[in-house]
Length: 179
Image 1: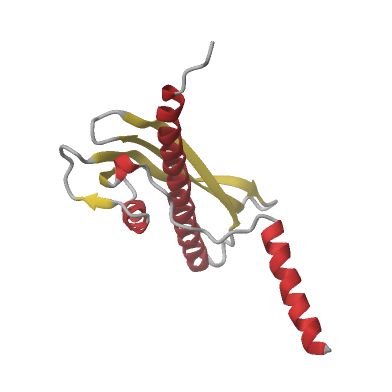
Image 2: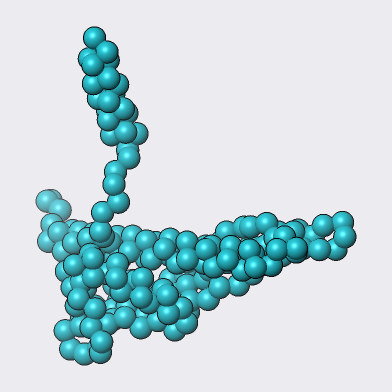
């Protein structure tokens, strides 16, 4: 009887996860015109490395040089900044925010703009302890790594959306309304 109860609990948990919309994260379905691309990132070597790895796992070939038949993914800006959020009664900073601003644009292999210049802003807040500056540096680095990972996913989601839009555009153009 207890075995039957365990099996039913596992099945109910599985049904609950599928009912709530939970899905494992998959690689992005990139547009066909982005199967070969050149990646240029100004600032943010970590972003370039993580983005190249994610693009390759999505089936794209990241080329070292641009050229004919190669799409262009340009990231003209990728920068971190810090803001003070709160100050204690003794005039010491107690909270910071780490901001990550990235701009990117994508042109396909023919030079047509797939994704116009867009800006993505992300931020995380953290508490600062003036007596433990070593821990704070490690905390900021962990936050920046997390923001890098989230930024890569945000860019891939937008590229995937551009692929859906690209696939839907010819179908919409080919259909003509009946009189």
